[in-house]
Length: 265
Length: 266
Image (cartoon, rainbow over the protein chains, first blue to last red):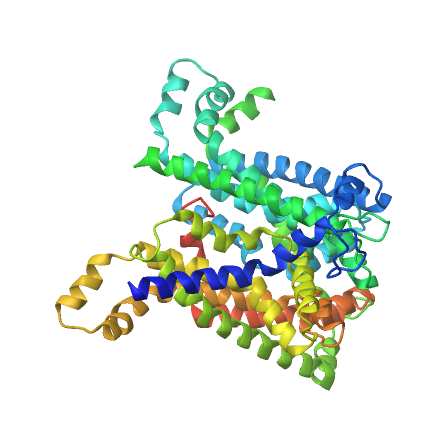
């Protein structure tokens, strides 16, 4: 009993430590003070100014860019990764292992290495950096996760039903659309959500591939802002909102993973 | 023509081709480019000067060693704090809820800059001075979940019968832990160490924010050189970092791919 109280206490203490910074941000998003840590009375002014666009134009642009990039990168990764997963699944074991190995590189590489290596690629090819390079970079580190979300669904699938569809006169495209796609749909969706959150969160790869034409994402905006010393107060409600959104997304993915697990067993 | 494409499509293993091309251009080629840049000068002639510059430059070497030190300390603290937490989380008598586990890994998904700034705010709020201690604490804050999760994963998959068997054979609780639980959880510990050590050694920006620009880590040095147009030197430093990481992963001999096979990341 004593042990139980002690261990629960330890968990809660750690959680409190882990969440203290985030809680501080959330609490101080409800006051107007310019400097974080000053409490000047309850107010939702920062939220209204964030949501009504009364905030610095560059922040609104950065938020828009972040979501646009995340949406495009996640969509392309999902498509590329799902098609790749079907291919990988049908490969002979040796080739499959080789591709899995390369597929793991972007996940194991530190972000700074991925960022610098892509930066060197773009300058070597003479591609000017901006939207396109950031999106390509994000696709590079997101697709491996999509591949890993889709592969287990293919393993669960009965491989005969694809052959059956072909025997019944379906073209490969029809068989893909009517047979394989429904089976891997949930894996694709998990992969998409994962890719989307990874893209929104990314800082290290983005900063090396974004160029200096004035394009900013949320991460690079926060970085530039923090370097100047004065953190835009509207970042507090924004962080609070991001936190809640990520929390909900995670709960959804987790629920899906659990359901899939249940139906499997 | 269309027939030919259809024929190729029929072999589903051919569907991997677009991704193979993509991986070659965006993963393999860029890594080769790091090596090429590292061994050339700005007019593309072969040279070892970039590495000579690193070795003859005490400031760069010191930053490198200092960063390894910070990363080792951070990893150790994360291990000391994280192992008991993972153990309690995986033990059905202490914790039955999956929500608790989620709470521990949730911070992994918050933007690292937001987390770091929140930590800076907390230190400000508690009047804790920013500096080396704040740096280590901030790193532990940022990377603790990456230690807890893999250890939790292996502990949870562990066969509980083995523990009972050890007890039946007369082991006391301490022996049960050192002889059974700890050895069986080593794969998780190893991948936890990798998941904390690698980002801490390669981090940049975080150190600047946590120390008001007073302490520089190796990642920052690399970033500064790349930003200032010293691409070849920056590439050489990146290669050194890659080498360090390769050595660490050989040393720990982990195989993370098998862990990821399950599909769900959480």
